[in-house]
Length: 91
Image (tube, rainbow, N blue to C red; front, side):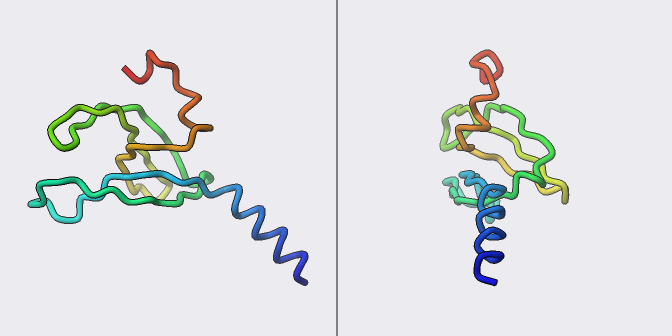
């Protein structure tokens, strides 16, 4: 039974990737709060490069959309996904 659990756990681990997203809990908050989020890549519908203003400066980021229609602004995505985009895409 332990082997089945271990294989299941390893299979699950491969589907989850770590993203650093902007959390906007309080609209009156002046500074941005960043959170680390594990997302199941099977539930990602789209990843779109965007420019976003963080603490008064423009940064390149990514707009993530999931199957349950949740949307996230990510400042960091895993390299295996970021490498899909060319430098031209990120301008």
